[in-house]
Image 1 (tube, rainbow, N blue to C red):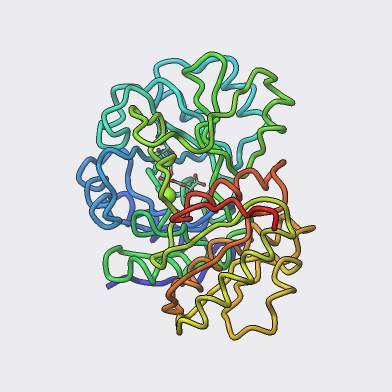
Image 2: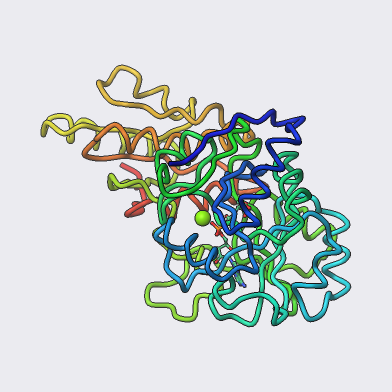
Length: 352
Ligand code: TXA
Ligand code: MG
C-alpha cells in the first residue's frame, strides 16, 4: 500500500515530515515534491534501499541517481574534493535546480552512481524537500518519481499513476513550481559541461562561469559512452508514437493540418501538442489538443509540458503530432530538449 499524505507546500507539517523522514531512514521509498518535478527518495547510503528504488522504477542499473542533501556542508561526505567552482556555483544557485557532478567519495555506494567514479548532488529549494532532508539528516538519492522512460511527474497523481503500490509514501504538495528537471553540470570536466539542460539556464550559468559548455542535445545514433544516460535519445516518452514537426511556422502548421486530415480520414484518433498560438488553426478539427499555454509564457509551458504528454498518452490515441517550440533561449532550451527526446521521430516541414 502506498500512503498518500497531503502536505502544505509552503509550511509543511513537522509531524508529517518526521514520519516521512523515519520511513526513509528505515530504507523506505518516499516520493516528494521538489521545485522541478517529484522525486522518489531512498536513503542514499543504504544499498538495499537504493536497489529497491531501481526496481520500483524499472530503471536500468546503468543510470546513476542524483543525491539530494539539505545543505552544502554535506558535500564533503559525498565527494573527494570540492573545487572552488563548485563552491561558487553552489553559493549562487543552491538551494535550487542545479545538479553538480563531482568526484565520488567511497562512502557513496556504487549502486547510486551506476559504478561511475563521479556523483551527482543537489540541494533542492522546495520547502517540502528541504524539510524532509533536514528531518531525515541523511543524503537522499532521488530520481524523478516516474516509471523509467515515462514523462517526469509534476503532480502527485502522476506519481500514483506510475508507482501506486510499489512505494511506501507520496507527499502530495501540489503541482511542482518549475515543471522540468534540474540542470546537470559536470564539474569533473574542464571546462564544465552541461550534460542535461534544465531549470537553470545555460545563460545563467555562464554569467557565473563563462566557460560552461553545452553538450550536443541529441547524441548521434550509436554514440557510445553516454556521459549522462538521461541523454538517451528516446526518453520522457509517451507510449503513443509522437511525431515532432520543426521548421518555419507556416510550413509546420500546414504540414500538421495535412497530416491530421489524412489520419482522421483513415479513421485514426489524433492528438496534437502545441502552444495556444500554434493550436489556433486546428480548433475546428475533431482532435484532442493538449494546449501548452501561450508561447510568450515559458513558465506556463514548462508547468504543463509533462502533464500534457501524460494527458495525450492516457487518451488512447493512434498518433500524436507536435509542433516544435518556437524559442530556444533560457528555459525553452530544456523544454525543447525534452520534447525532442519524447518524439519517436522528427520531421522537417518544408516549403510548399
Ligand atoms: O530535477 C531533478 O533533477 C529531479 C528531482 C527529483 O531532483 N531528479 C531527476 O533525476 O531528474 P533523474 O534520475 O530522473 O535524472 C538524473 C540525471 C540523469 O540524466 C543521470 O544520468 C544524471 O542525472 N546523472 C546522475 N549521476 C550522474 C553522474 N555521476 N554523472 C553524470 N550524470 C549523472
Ligand atoms: Mg528521470
